[in-house]
Amino acid sequence: MNETLERTNHTPSPVQPITDPVQSASVKARMQELIGRLADQHSLTEEEYAYLIDHRDAESASSLAKQADRVRRSIYGNKVFTRGLIEISSICRNDCLYCGIRCSNKNAERYRLDPEVILACAKEGHELGFRTIVLQGGEDPFYTDEMLSGLIRSIKEAFPDTAVTLSLGERGRESFQRLFDAGADRYLLRHETADPVHYAKLHPKEMSWQHRMDCLQDLREIGYQVGAGFMVGSPYQTSRELARDLKWTETFRPDMVGIGPFIPHHDTPFAHEPAGTLELTVYLLSILRLIWPPVLLPATTALGTIHPRGREMGIQAGANVIMPNLSPVGVRKKYELYDGKICTGEESAQCRGCLQQRMESIGYEIVTERGDIIK
Ligand code: 5AD
Ligand code: FES
Image (cartoon, rainbow, N blue to C red; front, top):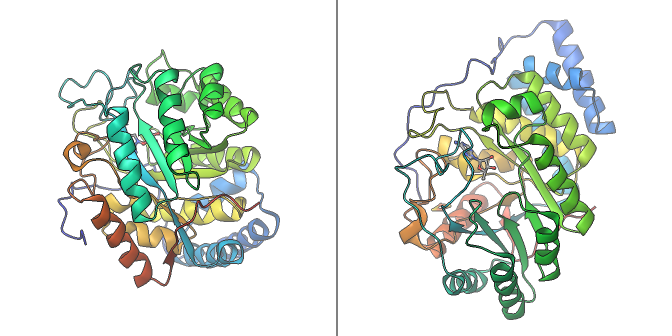
């Protein structure tokens, strides 16, 4: 296991008020009412979501986690689905301010995996019991539709029981269509923030919030299972932006929602910004489970990076997916979106074994299934 990893000193962000743990009786009553209504009706107003965030305390966190775990068990039992993550390229044409592999980071080590290497990783993943393979990478023009279609076809041909998920950033609708026609099942594209003003503070002016939203809509219309998501504690984020993310999720109902704490990377403009917290990330996981009960919700690597038991805590709060790393060990350190990323030294088999033990230690079971959403 990996409990002794080097960690940077992540201090909680001032934009994430951790409230006085002792709330007044009227606040407690209002919180219980909101949690009850959320669990029953799966919907609150944006103001109410902000209230839930601003007035959280240990009691509301535990009550949300309990409800979320109950709801998750009623649909998925104690199953935890796995996705084998292959980080195919650290080359990216974008310059997102938070990201360690942004194009203007001249210190980032760049690599790209050839299709044969990716196929070999997928084979190893299949032998280890993964029935979803995720191809993730920067927006790297090297991977043309033609090359990716060939790769997707080879994977689906070799492993017809395995879902192929793409996480390759924004592409055109035609491109999404071609990759879908080649056999891709799912696409992960985090919306990053549902607030266009906040989006503009995290991205260079060449990037457009509207285009990101259009991509998500296109992906859905084409027939992909769609994943969205956002960082918790990203710079300039307040409970208002988070409440917007929650309301947006309630409306769009993505099949998957990936959330993890923002963690600064030393070679980015946000190097000295505070990290998001474990506590708020886990709290939001519970809320997301109650908003959209069937959602596939990963306990992310970023969550495991800010706390040695972060992923276990995420699962206990309502998450039901983990995404171990299947990339060749030689490139893992180069796919460095943030500082201190865990699991960069492990072989794929070790990583899966480690997670299996971790999940069993808290009473959950890692299964060998595709893990599609049960609506
Ligand atoms: N901290 C946490 N998450 C990050 N991501 C990118 N950079 C960071 C960071 N510094 C997330 C983004 C992106 C996903 C692949 O990783 O949300 O969509
Ligand atoms: Fe534990 Fe990767 S080594 S999950």
